[in-house]
Image (tube, rainbow, N blue to C red; front, side, top):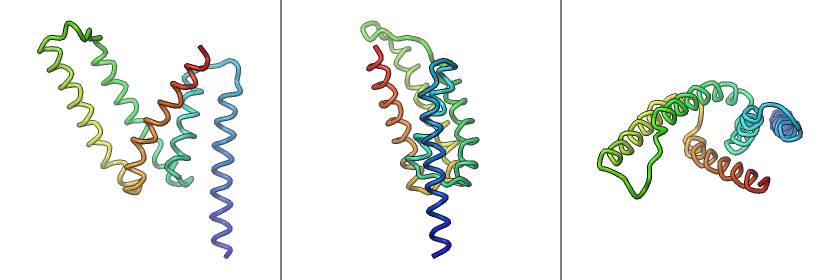
Length: 143
């Protein structure tokens, strides 16, 4: 019974911590928008994956490396395409980009698997997409 109560208190404390973190990120009128978004993303994904405190400490450094590598690839392939004037070279360029993103995901999936369960691994990509949708909705409401 004691073990169950300790586990419940930890979960409640984690949820409260991340809730306060996300509320404080939203409540700050000034500051770096990127930092606010990152704090919200951390809280959102941590909650969606139901990460324990220990797992979160192991997961987030790996995820941050993955995210930085992903951002580098985005910058590398930042070329804008006009859908009316695509050449075969543009199509091949897009395929190369997709291949590199897939290779990056494969590389990091093995690292994530050391920390996350298979269910959490599956939920990670879904949680990222859900967060992006939520962020887009909030941005549209502000306009």
